[in-house]
Amino acid sequence: MSSPEHGGVDRSVELIACEVPAPTTAGVEGSGVGVSEEITPLLTQPGKPKINIFTISYPRRKPREQVIRSQDTEGSLVLQFISLLWSGSRYSGVLCMAVSSAIYFLMEIFSESFSAQPIPLYETAFVRSTIILILSYSWLRRSEQPIFEPRHIRKFLLFRALLGYLSLMGFIFCIQRLPLSQASVLSFSIPIMASIAARIILREKLRIGDIGGLTCSFFGVLFIFQQRLTSQGGLNKAGRSSTFYFQGSRHIYAVLIGIFASITGGISLCCIRAASKDSGQPMSSVLSFSLLATPAAAISALLFEVFVLPSLYSLFLMVMLGLFAFFAELLLARALQLEKTSKAANLQFIEVALLQLWRIGLRQVVPSFGHLVGCLLILISAGCTIYAGPDKEMG
Image (cartoon, rainbow, N blue to C red; front, side, top):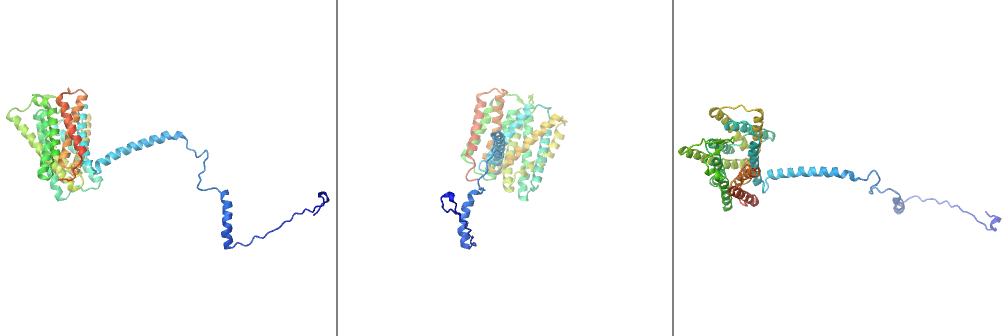
């Protein structure tokens, strides 16, 4: 095609139709690379997240997340502490006994802070033993553990129940007929008796450090009760002044009953350790004691005391103290299952030190040199026992 307007130059457009050859294997492999390289940038990358106004996280949600995390952290700390107590780790035994002594301390504070009508001691023991019996039986049933242990373990449980009840009744006798300071000193000689009994019965090694810790703690108790031991007056269990104490030979008779109660209490701790180690779970010793103590305390209350009908408020306080006693007895049995007797028993002195410090803080007791030295000796001994942990070789 030519036109004179363009100076006679012949300009033409040529259209060429090319046929695409049929794809072959080599052609596909060769062309596929080129096509994929050209098409791939045009496709959306699945690995790259899309960011738009609907996917941006705003800072207003952070405080709520922090609160949830803090709550989870607090809950996990509590669970970790419970796991540390019960898991059977290196310090589980001494920590269980320390917490058990702290619970007994809380029981004293609870009974002193909330005044109620005076209830006889055997009646109080009956209510407390009944609560422990119900809770221990329910625990074993829900955990699907056997209620009755094998025969070779049953004998330890029987001795534990019998000796424990004799110790309890003996100290109730002492509280009624001796000054409270003297009865307290006799009751806190149980750890020494338990360590001696464990050396004889269970063949446990009694090291110099164990003897030193027990001696230090017991001297701390003597320092704390020094003034009241030398005085003539005392307080009965209800907190009222009392002057009805045995004198002369009768006083010695009451002291001998207290020593007997201390010995039976120490042997009872050894039976708890023997039964708990063989059975693998400490709840059986708690159940066995409550099985004997509940009916025996009921019979003693009917024979030796006048029954007092508690009010609802007094009954509530008695039930709460029974709950505290259950957990204290359970942790005590667990501690004796994991730790040797001398170390675990030494931590029972923590109760009297914490109680004295509490009364000094509330100005119920005038602080003296003996009180401070006694508390310091007990806390140092307990701290060394916890820090040292269990022995490498358990005797």
